[in-house]
Length: 261
Image (tube, rainbow, N blue to C red; front, top):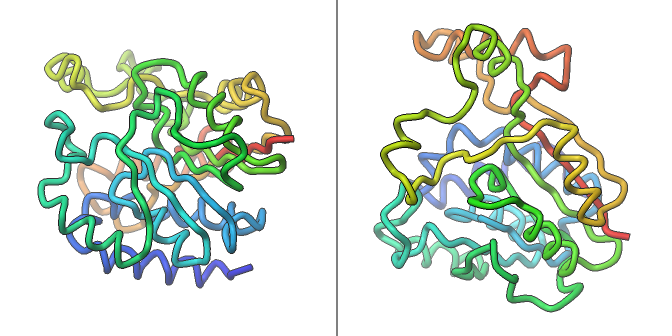
């Protein structure tokens, strides 16, 4: 099992190798790191076959591959054929070359349809900050993940905590805790933001309803940074994140690790 410091080193190397492709995801570094640590503690990286759902530019997929896993990524919005959206990669051939150097395969596929893999094909499945973007309920996706996992396989789901302290405060003062209304209103059917976020209890229930057992959920302030305390537009959110630290149910991000019997 690798140490937390080695996970951080590998992740930094992935960011370096992706260059400009990874710049929009600098804020997600701590979330990726915590996910790697969770999978590592469960023994679900080295020599394991892993599917990364909604893999984006491949940060988690590349890190897992570098740590000894055999990784396949699935995404839809980054490919040239996708409608114009914030995730579409203009120089896709350059990104593909980085993936090829790491030896990972990324498939263009809509994860809301049947996944193109056999039953029990994977030891672990990772879904990082994806389910909040889905147009429909994650029920079909969770059932598909359960199908393609081996018995004893692990499903890691990360998603924003809808009941975090900042959202509670916003609602208390009459402001919506939802995604920016103007973006939602203007983009219409091409909206790719957060359509629904979930509480800790809701995420646990959905995984249980989908047949998963031994569901463990933790919450972390994965966006917190001491440097952002000095940022005029971000300091308030950072102060709220500090206040939420003693109460896990009020932290920013949920990390659920579920097992298939």
